[in-house]
Image 1 (cartoon, helix red, strand yellow):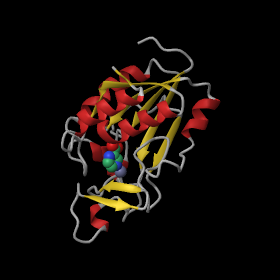
Image 2 (cartoon, rainbow, N blue to C red):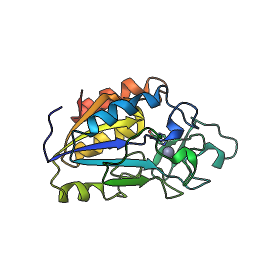
Image 3 (cartoon, helix red, strand yellow):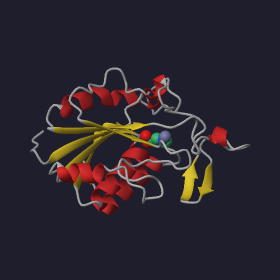
Image 4 (tube, rainbow, N blue to C red):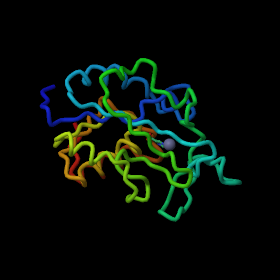
Length: 202
Ligand code: VGL
Ligand code: ZN
């Protein structure tokens, strides 16, 4: 892969809880690790994201009496899918997959750390206004193109890639480096939606 100094790789949520055996396991989630390790070597700028929830987070079904994981509720910021408890701060499930090579990464963006709001995107929380600061970081580093990989295609990768385009970055999702949760066709819907907003799907 040919990259330049104005390209960044954004590695989304390659954490134990999204890999087989984890609390919110994505089918073959761990299969992205060798691919990501290989392509990381081609980028001068590598950013990792880490889903990082306090116990009792509002996106957990266990925080809502009588509701099960994968139900949807209305929050003040809009609809929110409820998840099994996952990626609790400082837990083993929140750690990066042990084989992910994190040595070359220069920034780790933690997200979902506010109890009352979830954050799928690496750029904005689910209210679409609370910023993680990533746009400013990438702009100050002179980044123009971003490549997104990781977990899960239909949630955190999708919303990160769509926000990246909206923030003015040329954005590509490398599907070989992604796996999805796939609730009711959500992977296909995500790919259609990403294409519609101008994300290059490769
Ligand atoms: C994610 C659901 C909940 C993801 C994170 O990384 O795609 N999905 N938290
Ligand atoms: Zn989460």
